[in-house]
Image (tube, rainbow, N blue to C red; front, side, top):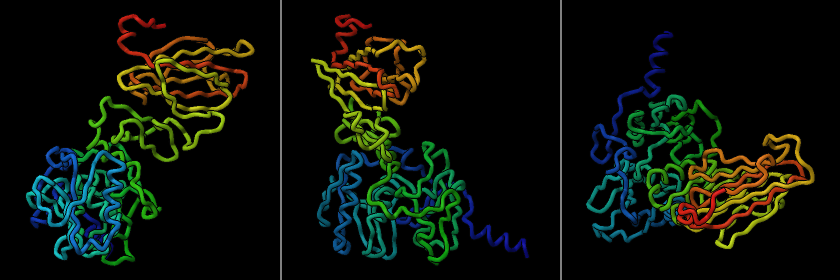
Length: 401
């Protein structure tokens, strides 16, 4: 009897199988590579158009989904009329069809112009549409990750038939998770009882976290923003720049970052979304004329300094206070300054304190991140900065110190 019960339990828990993907429009199974590892399945169009069928037009909030993705990435969406059949306007076409549901994984047009996204009724939520647009762009559901067994128990017997084709575990050879854990608020993470035949029972049971509050948000999570920009937008900014603490570049303007959590500042260098009154600034602009300030190392202060593209920044510093310190190690008790001058802002910066009383440095690109730390009100540092031409430095017109 116990063996029979175990056998039934194993049947009801979705089994591990070799990778295969169901193509709902063609109604067959076939092997294929994931869109993110196959560039031909990514959308290359500068503008991705979309149509909304008349039956769905009553839902005026659907446009907000495309606006939200555009705001958080380099992708541009534009609505066209349902009867605009210009083949050069590649598009998503939102339709109602009781015999089909969802869309293709990645770009795969159903006509010369459009890729269909099917819904089975007109009551489509923004979250539901956002998911299928993401899926059509080449981003899979979290329950299909190669490491899904670390996060989910999938109860196949309680999943609605229309969604079963979208429950297929990918292989590590095909999908890269970039080492990012599952977040219950990610757009591609389903609720535990979603698509359930019996809503009182679970479909995608979580073994990693029990909170289920993802439907309280309006914006994409930082991970959603990271992934879409990682695969569609990295080459949009020239010169490219790096955000710190997990920030994602704003690829529309290429001059700031989208920051996770409570981080703030132009490059997410602030550990709080608000500038403290003691710090007084978060982002400074370097000019040819130069500028500078004195700063007590009595509290934390994080800021950036940016110059024009194609230039670099000359930074000079000078430590002075009322007495010569006895401790020459750079730590929080005696005050120090960390300056991130290299292109890779994720690497530790140069640590400066009283032991190296003064000096001058040059950045490798047109922005630097500065972290000031300390608890001594008498410890003061003067920081001077200005924009310079890198060619003048390399030709010796500006002396390096």
